[in-house]
Structures are given as structure tokens and as C-alpha cells.
Image (cartoon, rainbow, N blue to C red; front, side):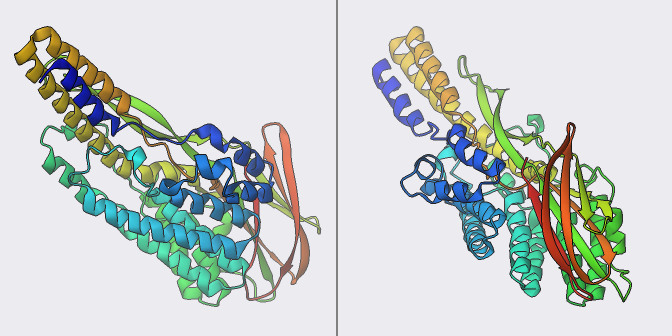
Length: 439
């Protein structure tokens, strides 16, 4: 094999791995509309088949992202039927992608993750059921809301060991992967306080008090199971939900703030038992980072003068990071196997040239192979952008009637925003008001 042929061979091999990642700047107009609450404009940008969003972001490979992002923005806009349809499509595609990926793990290590169809993150798959449940509730269907919560709880049962079989297959297929030297963690998240809280409310709203009590107990258990996620106290108002005086109605308020995390690339280098310059390899790994929220306090004020502060029930960004741990371990293993395979191809080509054309020629081929391998390793940074980052809850017992409810959002500099709604409070039913400030 000549140097020219070897270099051409490496170019053909490694060109298959060149990233076609989405440019994060493509989101800026939609981000601005969501930040300002201009949901109709954001939807128009997403739905424009000839627009930049469809061409640059929501391509065929990113179909799940389309349904996740549009589903959330439809929800914020109060288009609950449309939101539910998007979430149902996203859930179906995530399940199909998971089934395919599990059957293709062996032999797929040389595939750059960016050229694969986006398959969704675990927290996305969970929270589409939370907002799907709220869609049903807002359309007057509490039984449908309970179905969504049950689906979420079923998914959580399998979350802990979802990737274990795939990890085992990767290790079995490439004995050069040293798992002890790789930064891998397992998620401890197996119960959602937010989902249990909503389940408790929905059960109470349909008169199923025993089921509501069970979900309250599971809410408490969620905090015990994942102390790294639930670093805050259980909302005091949650303990009041099952002891409402018979002559009173209860007003519940849930407020979502901020926006979910994004991914950035982090690189590490691993040593390899191969000749220089293929004796190490670059791993390009996705890492979740928060988008800090401006909000630190949420207060509810009624037209009667009564007021109460909402309490954090779930740091949704922390859930996103925690549930990503197990998948990130799989990503690290696959990236290691892929990088090792590239390095081996480069080293074999370099050795072939070295034997026929001399040491210098072999070093050149090895160096070009190393450069091409490192350049082709780019992390998959795709992620939905419009889930909120925090969920706050609270409640108050009131005489039946209609109340003007103002939700005030405060940051370090004082009042950020105030939103008002008229909410009817009735006895023996669920009276839930939902508010957002995605900043």
C-alpha cells in the first residue's frame, strides 16, 4: 500500500464520521420568542416548512426534537390538543428509537452519534407524560391525566437498569475498553416527586383518597431515594392536600420557571497500547449544563388579600442531569470503542506503509490518521430546549367561589413578572391553576 493510497483510505474511512451537528445559534429567534412569551411566533417559526428552523434544526434526523419542542410550546400557548398529539408522536418515536438502538449496539461503534436519528433523553421521555397529564387536565379529563402519570411511573421502574445490557455488550465486543479508567456513574433517580404530587392531586380530584395517600407516601420516598436531586425540603403544603375541611374548596397552584439544560462538549484523552502517534485517542463527550433561572421566589396573592409562597417540588434540571448519568456511561463506552477502532485502523495502515515505504511514511500515515480520528470525534449536543427547569407548588383552603389569582415572580433585583387569572374554586374537586415564566 502506497502512502497516497493509505491516506486516501483513511480519508474515506474517517469522512463517514464527520459531524453534522446542529448549530445552536439556529435556535436564537425561537429562544427569544419563548423568553418573551410570544409562543405564537415561536410556533410559526417551527411550523414554517421552508423556514430556517426546519432546514437547520428540525431535520429528518431530529424529528423527535420537533415534536418535543413544538409540544412544549403548544402547551405554553394553551393549545392542549395539539400539544398532546406532539407528545404522543414523540413518545412513539422515542420507543421505536430505543428498540432499534438496543438491537444495534453490537457492531455500531464506528457510527458517529450525530449522524444517527436523535433518540431522546430519559428525562424528556418522562416529562412528556407530566405535561401530557396537564394537557388532559386542562381539557377536563382527569382520568386521561392519571393514565399519563401511570405511564411515567412505569417508565421509572425500568430506568435504573435501562442501559446495563447495552454496556455489557460493548465491553464484551471490545476487550480493550478499560471501564475502570472511564468516568462513569449510574443514576439513582427512580421516582418523581412532581409526578407523585400531580398523581395525588388527580386522585384526590376524582375521590380516590386511598390512591392519593399512596402517591403522597411515594412523594416522600422520592426524596429519600435521590438525595442528590431533592436537596430541598418536601413542600409543606403537600401534607395538607389530604385533609381539606368539608365545607372548603382547595386552590392549588403550580408554577414552572426557567428552561431546561443544554449540552456542551467536553474532551478527554485516553491512552492506547498502540505505536506512536496512535497511542492515545480523544473522546468528545456531551455534558449537561444548566441555564440559570432569573426566578428565586414565587408568590401567590389573591384578590381577598390572602397570600402564600410556592415551594420547590422538583428541580427538573437536576433530574435531567441525574437521569443522563446512565446514558452518559454508555456514550463513554461507545466513544471509547469507536476511538479505539479508529486508532487501530490508523495504526494498521501506518504499519503497512512503514514496512513497504519506510518509517517516515508510516509516521505520516499514522499522524494523518490520528488527526482525522480526533477531528471526527464530536459530541452529540442535541437536546430539547423548552422544558422548564423548576416546578413550584402550593395550595390554600378557601370558601367556594371565583378568585383572581396573581402569581408574582421575584429575582435578585425584585419583581420580575406578575400574571393574573380568574380561577373558580369548588368543593370536592381539583382546582389547579398553572403558570409559567420561562426565564
